[in-house]
Image (cartoon, rainbow, N blue to C red; front, side):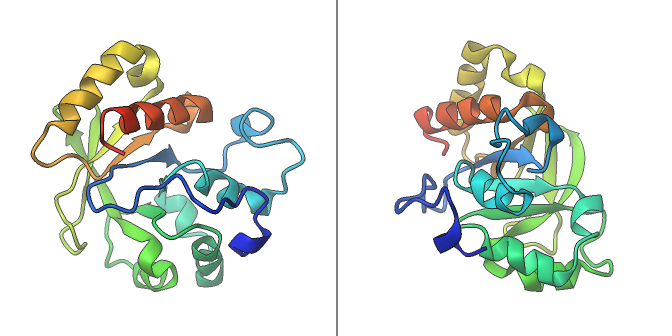
Length: 195
């Protein structure tokens, strides 16, 4: 689907076009629990990614999901998202079969291949882009619904993160938190100067 056919396309997308803006998104965008709560019940499945991409600036795609789609479908993902949107692809090995084709298909929408590491200083998990990626070493904080429960504490954490010399590249939330909680995180990230 082209942005011209996107029912939620806007002339001025909510994404900042800056090198320091932190990406805010979910781990995946295709969640049954979001049907009827975030996604309208009559929204066709093929419109979910463009719908999601108009609200969030990136997505972490689990390895089992992106490896199951063809390069043509990955190119469609690219076409369905606005400039500045980023796909983080989970992988244990970006040199494994299929990774190069995924990178070629997503081109400028590929934000990086991501491998999960140990706990981050904020108490969330940190995913570290693998050494072959441009921008290697940038952290991606994986947040749980519990991390979002106390908005004041979350605001203080985001303020502290914003003051770090090298802020994380992305704040990614488990889909279990729900799209509304992820949208609140995006707003808090904007208020604290992260996004």
